[in-house]
Image 1: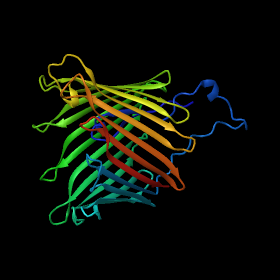
Image 2: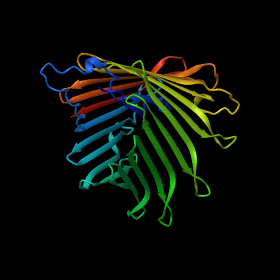
Image 3: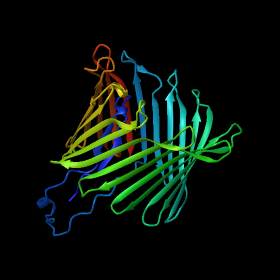
Image 4: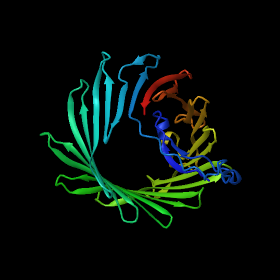
Length: 384
């Protein structure tokens, strides 16, 4: 029997939708017990879980931006990712004014060493200016360790080239994941290097996930940030409750932030997501965000929360494997709090091909005359 596995996913489809936290389940809703327990006709036991899909060998993505008049505008990003053994590569290009492709950023990651308890990788990043000439280089060293008891710790050290081309440490990020007594604890620390080379912590985040059975759970996340006196102070806290209601995955998140008036942690917004996944692969999802001010603002005079934005997603699957997703988003107007404006529409179509799949995403936004106008298209080809 399989149950919904909840994940928090940020959907970055447009400047407006990027503000919405979409809550998704990553597996089908619970199946009826009688059906799940029936043995296969061959007498064999239930098949093992399907293996995770193989990482794409190559992925090419090109974005096209349109003017308010619907004309294609130069400057779209062309992105190509590839995997060759233990080496992963990323190349980003942009189109210049004359339509020629010039490099914008290249990235290469390779495994330096690997054992049962430690894996060390290196990622090299090269940046370019508008003419395609190299402007700066960076490097990241990633160390992934397995901890006693089954936990993991990943340390990423960031280096930037100085004026003489020498690599200097600029930042370090540490993520530690441990499990104990039904709890999954994730701590992440971001540190920057000072002028004397010593690290100082600027952000510290801790998340605790608890499972209350197979189809419910909670997540508590606390974020601390560096203050002017050099100490760390809690800047925000999130409390998430996840449960199943009649086959629908429900996720409620409350976010507490420092009030600009009292300086104490107070409820800033509340997000409610409902996701229904069907056996044929289709799904319906609604996310509502409540707060005290429109368009991400904060009204110190507000006494109760009001609905600020709504996101709706519908996914359908055709017999030929084509997947279509339609996402609509609207939010309360900052000018007239009684109206919902700036509606956006995102349409995504994924079609299987002989060696992978092709994906096209079209983004529409409401223009000043009230019509939905295409503002961006993203075309992606994936080879496996």
